Image 1 (cartoon, rainbow, N blue to C red):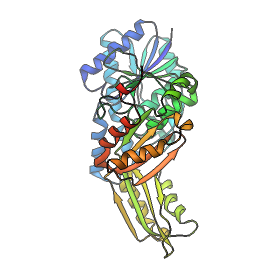
Image 2: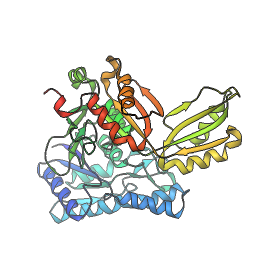
Image 3: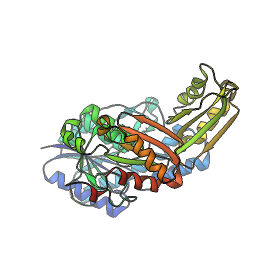
Image 4: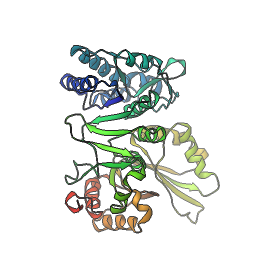
Length: 413
């Protein structure tokens, strides 16, 4: 008997017929003698609809009430799946995040899981009951409902798997694994049989939609066996593993994947005083507001003793970022605040970069040859990210995929 956590995303839960199909898949695991906990997302598009309601009411909404609204999507699907399982003879019950409970920090909209009380969950599993748990949600001090950020159901699933010491955590999505890039943009993208935790972490952090960043980091930290599978077929998926398992593959291919993210907004502050502490005056208020800043570029100081500072934030946080910066204008001392949402971040990722020179140079030349201007650059040991005009996103992904030999027909068997 194995303990398994099965997580199903929004497309898997998009309507009653798909929920019934999920129930049948869960039943197969139960019939095989396994103890099963299921973590579900809201129906496809439902969270976006709920978020839109919040923004329509007020662009500067109360994050605590935002969580109450958007957490309702997963409550619906967990109840419907429990009903579907019962209808086919599988004992099941839904458990809300506050009922287990899943304790989190009070960072509403981006809470972090602190602990999961598994006593109730373990008792249900030992009795042969399938526990259906809404992903994305928990409860903070004061019994306020919290949410974990977009894609948080992945983190919920990994956290539940770690807490209940599951043998594996299967993430079911609308794709059958992790690809070298988005197959909708590059039809010749190939599915990876294995990818390292570190590479998956980078890809997830820069726009790959398969897994949420925090879920991969948690799986790596807790050593949770993680597999990405399709909800719609029974083909093998992609295993997320340690470096040692694919060492030879890393030698053959130094770039593993290419990701893109259009959910970025660029902010530029002009004529910022060129003095110690000036940059801290910009980013400290943003940090206090729990706004994550990504790319940062500071120009060479002008002869007037000032400089321009450019950085990116998630586009969903643009309104709050502008509000924070406007309130801090006197403390920062900038002249103008300019923002642009017509940008996209393109990232190449691969642990093989550690042992190959010229990776970034090839990226810059490939984009330059196609007339694609680079507005900002960030790097790490295994990734290079550039900010470009959004209209060039798909072209950039396609030409880079080919340049690095990732197209399926270019890769040796």
